[in-house]
Figure 1: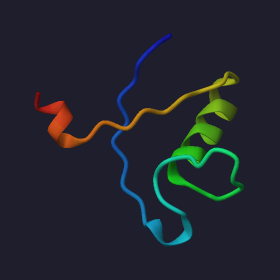
Figure 2 (figure 1 turned 90 degrees about the horizontal axis):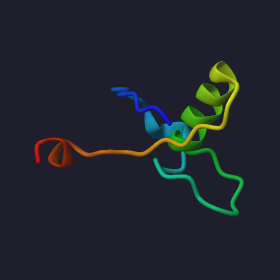
Figure 3 (figure 1 turned 45 degrees about the vertical axis):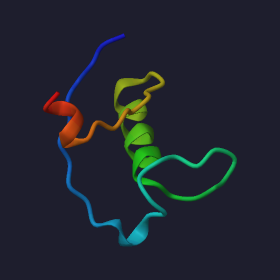
Length: 57
């Protein structure tokens, strides 16, 4: 497993929140980022969000 840092900004109007919603077919930021990265890297990707407060600890 490798870790990478991605800083992203998005317009959330077309999404149903950040976090994937298990069992629901809704478009979320996390789901779309994972889908794109998985396609580029040809492997399953799990994105974990870290807040600014967590980064400063």
